[in-house]
Each structure stands twice: as structure tokens, then as C-alpha cells.
Length: 500
Image 1 (cartoon, rainbow, N blue to C red):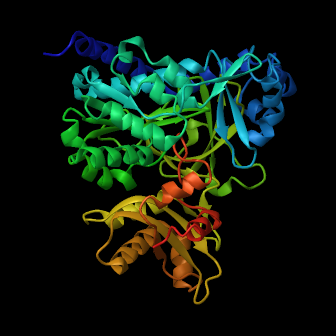
Image 2: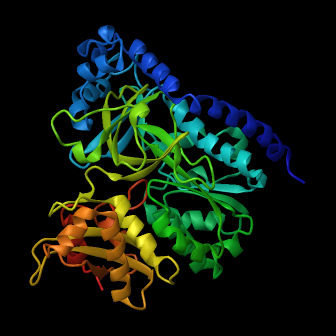
Image 3: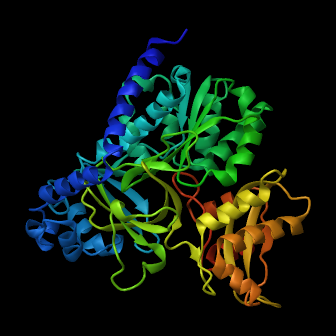
């Protein structure tokens, strides 16, 4: 017999699905309204005055007045906000800063305003409600739920609270879920990731877990510790665990490993949250891609990735995007980010409605020889090469080897296997075949004997965790880049003696 809470969730899910269908079926009109709202509300901010917002009457005007920026370019404005000034990027002051670790700029402070904060919470809630609406399954709301996330302890700067986004969002969990939610506040506040995971295992091992959520690499660590302590696979330990919610990375490289750890298949929901906004979530179980959130105070622009680094690359709105093109996503938001490059690349898998996959990072690619290999291609190659085999992969990254001791240069795949290949040469051949089919530049370089086929370097068990710990980035929202155009990570793995 379903509980009152489970029974109530179904009509609520139906109501939310109708509202989502309403804006997603009118995408261009929805985005036009968001654009007009953003411009009219920021006219008299410092940024609005500096960029002639009072004279912006069209998207073309916006393009002329507001250049694409990354965090470094926006930093002078952000610093004024951090210093306590009002009406700089958005009306008034933000209510939070989401603190992230920048690669070039040290800590980044991403503003979250009174207007933008609810969109983070609603999108996460709506992802679950759309799942209930589609499947009719609401039993899981009666079980325990775990969200592996950052510490909810917040600092304060000039009256504005700051912390990790996942820690900020933890303060907004609805009351009706609080009783079901694990881990405890005390455990959630543990800073050291390994200590925290051990405490989470202790708290959850005897509970009826129904939803587990987090970045796959860190959930994997939690699962492995559960199995080590209980001697059971996760599916036997948590008999009602049937929904895995994840974001941050592509799940496909982990799927086989997870099914092995769980002992059965479970449904999953993919999310696309970031400190800068909650951009998309999986709205259908059998559709590829995530529904782009066009009604969440975010105005989207797109630039074809292969032209991004040209002078004045062409910027387009959703009305002009095409399927299967690699785009850099640019956003303007009610948090006061303007024509802001978040660094992600996306591809559209559907235009009715607009659904995307994250194809990689604009800075994460290999093109040491002009091959333009991106994250999506290496993930797809690994998926195709291991499908139908017993091979499982815990983690991997790819780097160019430009100056080998002998022979032609090559791409080095550094892989931590859960279950190793019986024949490495067969795996290499399958990876090569997939990459060459996906990427004609790479194919030409192999054929032209500029590059030789890839090499695999096996990484010791927990080697990537050891590496992340060595650079102070174990746990939280941190993740290994799938590939890089330099050898910084690859050389560190070798130097730390983490290769087999």
C-alpha cells in the first residue's frame, strides 16, 4: 500500500509535467521572454550601464554590446560584488557565492541571487517528478535517500554566505524529504572525503536505501566500501534501491562497473547542474539527452566549438542550432552572468524538445597534431570497445605522447581497470576503430603515419584517487578530465608510481 506521500507525488508530478510541456513546446518564445526579463532587470546595474542595456532592443544589439567572457574577464565585476557593493551584476546583492576551484584564477566566486537560487532546487525536484510521471513509480519516496555532496558549512564574506554549490543546496531540501535523507548533518560536515565516506557507510549500511545520488566516481568509492564491509553486493544490501541520480560526468564509462557492484540494473536520471546554473535534466528514460532548461532565468547562446577561438566567432540562439554539432555553451542569467563561457561543450540530440548531452570541455581536448579529439569521442570509443565484454573501467584519462623514446608519437590511454582485458591488443584495435570512425582528422594522421595507434598504460587500483588526493581534490565535485592537450596528469601518474 503506497504511503500518502507516494500517492500525493503522482498528481503533483502530472501538474509539473504539464507546466514543463507548456514552455518546452514554445522554446523560442520562452527564451525571448527570459532575454527581455534579464535585460530589463539589469539596466541600472553597473554592468548594464557599462554595456548600454538601456539601448538593447534585440538579440543583435546584445551581441554588439556584450562580448563573450570567461571568469577572468568578469572578475573585476565579481570582485566588486565580493567587496560588498550592490547593483553590480544584478539588482542588489547575491544571497550566496558558490565557491569553486578555478584552474587559472584560484578560487572562483560565482554569484547566486534570490532569483536564481530557486531554479537550482526546482530543476532537481522536477527531474525526479518527471521520472515519477513517466514510470508511475513513486515507491522510492518512502525509502531512505542519500546525496553524496559537499559540506553544508558556509563561510561569510561581507554579509554574503559562501560554500560549495552542493553544500548550499543541502539547505534547501524540502521538509517532507528531511526524515528520509541521509547522511546526517554531522557526517555531511566532515571535510576529509575518505573519512566522510567511511562515516556514510556506517550510517547507511543497515538502512532501506531507495535513491542514491552523486558523481559516479565518488559513488563508486562508496559502493566499494559498502561491499568490503558487508560482503554483499549493493543490490542485495539495499533491496529497494532502484534509482541512481548522477551528474558531472558521463555515466556510460561507469555503467558496466556499477551494474557489477549493484548486481542488477537500476534506473538512472542524469542531471546537468553547475554553480552557474542548473542547465538540463533527463526527462525521459528511453530518450538520449537531457531537457535544456529554457524557463529557468538562463538565456543560452551557442558557438561552434571548432570556430570558438577565431576572432568574433558566430553566436547563435537555440532557434539556429543543429543536431550533432559540437557547441560551446554561453549563458546569461538572473545571477548576473553575461555572455558567460562556462567552458562546457554540448551537442543537441533532439530539437523537439531541445535535449543536449555534454560532449566535453572546450579546454579538454587533444589536438597536439591537429586531430581535435574531444571527450565525447574517447568516451564513445571506450563504450563501444568494452560493450559485450567482461572489461570494466574504474577511471581513465587520455594524453598525447609527443616525444616518445622511440617510434612515432601516440595517444596514451591511462586506464584503471576494474576487470582487465584478456587481450589488450583486441581492446586497442576496437578503440582505434571507433576513434577513426568518429574523427576523420585522427584517421588521416594514423593513415599518414604522423601518429601510431594508441597505447594503454594500466593504473594501479585507486591510483586516480591517490592522484586526486595528492593535488588536494579528492571528493566533492572534483573529477578527472577525460583528456588533456598536455601531459600534466599523465606525467604525475607516472611520477607518483601509480602505473602498473
